[in-house]
Image: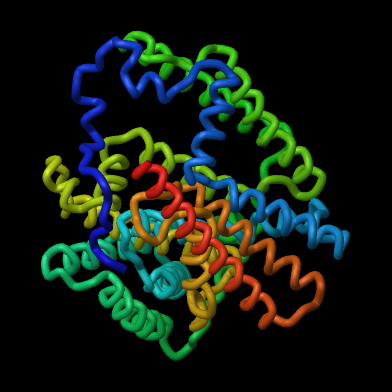
Length: 428
């Protein structure tokens, strides 16, 4: 991964919030946003034609995967299997959120699997062998992950060591540290009555609570859109209009309530998966609505342009690497809690590769500057769906690796083609 990605323009991502906005309706920022439901659809179609596919390919791919496996095995789309699928997605999906962040900078972290395994070991040792209170053990485990990311960021910004090399060294070092922490036992089982194990294995929302959570999310979205439209109107900018906002809110309600209704026919929505969803939403808002998020996108698009715009590039790198390792540690906690154990294989096997593949398959560009926190959710659902479907068909794990690799390659090809399309549209 290179530390810089060429881009055709130097833009301060915070300029739009600092500069006075003219009320002239001919301003290009006003023309770009059309009002009404039809305008929303037309705007989306224009983005697709220009090569900005967003999450469309992975959504279509997920639908195809579910249709194929559902036709081959009736159990695949059963409520029970889909509930299991969501539970299995939470740990690696959480790790993938951190991968999304570093990829947005055009960098990589190859050690997230080892960091998650180390976190599992620390949690198990502090809880079982040392008898620490749960809260203290959790805080200590997460802080270790944060510290690791800060070290990565310091090495990267201070000495200019490529992130590939730093994190490859971390992969080996922290895997060894994990073995050292576990000691000769090699495996430490967590108490099944422990709150952290109960949280991962047996905590599910009741149907009523799940519907209330969904409606609260829709209401929060509706309020946010209305407030945003009012601010735009006060600044002399075009707005989507109440009709368009209500249509979006209705679609969101359908998107949330329909899956919940189906999952509630089984055990319902896992609290651990809900926490994962909450983390995705928080990071999505942070990336799209905060100065820090716009700075991350700017640095990933063009480091030198971001530096000239006054962005503290070193601070951005430090924060992103710290967040990536923090999410890796949190994913390790989820994995240990779900398995009720930490052992020498925790965080090993395909954890690392699946987390990276999930971020890329979900739509985050390897070239930096393009992606979304939702990539972690979509990507891990694709990977977990493939694994679940092949297991139900009783196919060898080798097939799963080959299929996942093919999907990953296809995702990168789509990203490369869309980049060329956008570049050609920009030159035109």
